[in-house]
Image (cartoon, rainbow, N blue to C red; front, side, top):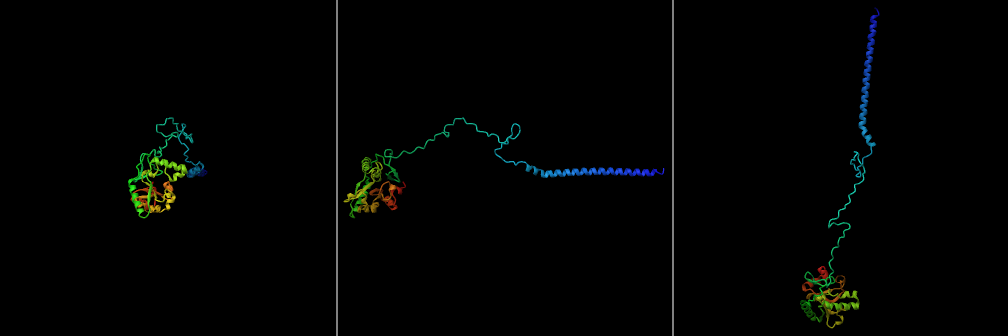
Length: 292
């Protein structure tokens, strides 16, 4: 019986060590489990933080391409770069008035050329009767010599006579038919191009208005309707004084491109005192003054 308490004490110690081992084992297992869970959480957090960036770098960049049609196909997949839809062919007949590439657009109607045979009324600008290369008179326009113009010329001739100059109006009104004969004669003598520089075609002559006066000086007949008339006393007097009686030098020097005619120191046009003085003071031709 002396051995009984000792054995019991040894048994107690053995149980205690067993219990301690179990406890240590349980604690160790729990620690390992907690550590494993902790490591898993950390990995998950790291993957969550950087995984998106890694995946983004590895994924191809999405390009907003207008040629990509993202409509779904019957299979539910997105179809890219499908064949473009072509417009249906229009087989409808164009309605009346519709302009097509084959439609012939009619040209705008052109005004008929003005000729003595086509015009029916004389042309006026601000009350001034015009006859020049752009504006013809009707073939039947025949007013005769203008009485007011003749009276003004007689007054002018009287004033010139007081200074020893005898003026003569050797050609005033000319009818259309008269101009036909005169112009054709000049064409036969000089050719049409040269004749057009100093003679009006029928219907275009200012003489047909009854307001155009060819003026010369008595005793100087060899200079009538000649370039040499400009050097006579009568031509110089007219150039300085004719406007005071209502006449202007109609075709001055250096204005051929405007009037259409070469310098004619003998051809005067009656306008009335007021207008003639205004045109004279302006230094312009009648076309320039009236803006035609």
